[in-house]
Length: 156
Image (cartoon, rainbow, N blue to C red; front, side, top):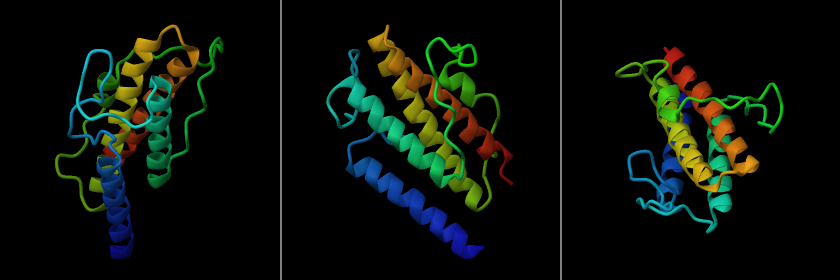
């Protein structure tokens, strides 16, 4: 069990180092620049490239948490309606433990990172509307945030 916790902690730490060293927004810093300004830039240039980089990071984080990627959102599909909630509202659906035990702390940290990335994707997508691809990435990010947050809240 100690080995599993150490491996998870190492993965999370490596993710934080990559996020900080790669110019991506760690969960405790300001927002990447958009047309309204912000903090650290997300590498990649165009808003589409930034969204893709954030989406790829979400996929890696879901894998770390052993969560499947959500079914991709498709424009016009009845099953894929737009979730009107903000990422903040999705995070508020459950309250994680104040001091999560052991590996749960890592799960909650990664979950927060997923939600931070989803929030940035949605902000960039709002600037690109109408754009079904970016809207889909926002919706996928919201689903990933919700799944990660729920795993954090359920962790004991």
